[in-house]
Image (tube, rainbow over all chains, first blue to last red; front, side, top):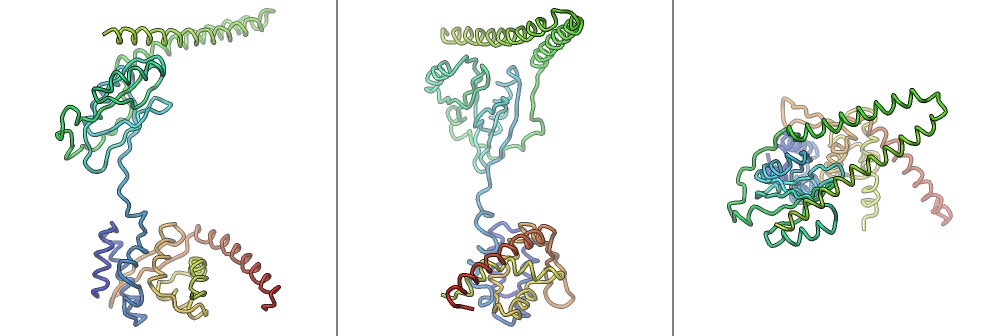
Length: 247
Length: 110
């Protein structure tokens, strides 16, 4: 190969073109030069410019940080968050479905620590954030009555928080523990029993004069039941927040 | 400024696609064909980045073939997507060309 093509091979390698593709391309260019009879520099232009044209800038950008979307139930949350944090995963936000949107820097990732707190609303979250800020904690998302905070591992571990060989993420993305499974199971059983019972009762009463009234009653019952559960959750979160603030 | 070079810049990808409609070809042969058609000499420094981009976009597929003597070549073939793009963009170019001709004709250029 000519000096020109050797130089081009080096530039292509720097730009991350894999060896096989590069070899095929360089062979093709060598064949082209032989056939055209022109000097490579004249045919293809300056090496740097030609390499840049062949592999445009967007293909040579810094690699994007790894992104992981995962979830854990409220009981498993704190332990799993800190486990992922120890592997360098930083939670950027919590999405609408309660999943953690995490990123890990491609170069020099460091560990992260997390807290999960019960918090009934925006005002409480803001107060909590102010209270935790001196310890290096910052909010990283919330879902329902759960608020999440993170801090870089360097706050407690200093330079040792940097991970030299971060492990590859495991395949599991949803962490449901025994307590979470029981809680979800109980809710499902209550919903199925109540729903089936209501439907059976309505089917029985469908032919009677009270049919429409019973439908309306069921609808009101559903709304009332949902509000009651939401109210109880909110009240429990408020109580927990008040207790937390006292400590 | 060389006007022909800037005209060619906007339409070279279509010309390359069009030159592959009759079958596979390789870089130098494509350049020669376009030269023979009166479009002037297209240097490798211009042609290969275009071929590369079209390959990345899935408009052409390339296959490397080694030869007994000398360096191997990459043969390019038009993909279905490439045919679709050629038909759509070729039509757009023809309409553009008609508009340019029409305005030039009003200016007395025929």
